[in-house]
Amino acid sequence: MKDVTKIIKVRKNADGDITDVMLEDGNIYEISDAIMLAKHHKIEGVNVGRTKNGNEFLRSNPNNNTNDNLDNLPMF
Image (tube, rainbow, N blue to C red):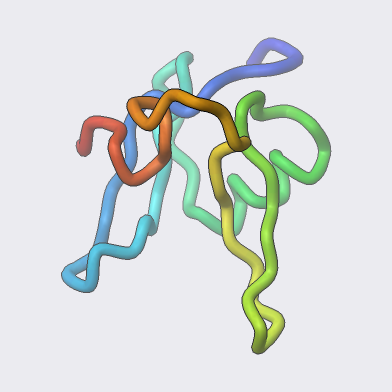
């Protein structure tokens, strides 16, 4: 994997929660692994948020383009 990559597709569970992501190189990571990669600045365009109960989640960096929001990416 190159130094920094992007998420291009997502996989969701029945509740609509993102469970896995696919990166530009075709590698697939569980969301927990993607969160770790984002924390180490290996995935561009995302950051790690924290819910009120302390759970971490991955989210797109804010911008004026909703097309690159994780929920709007193609599914695999």
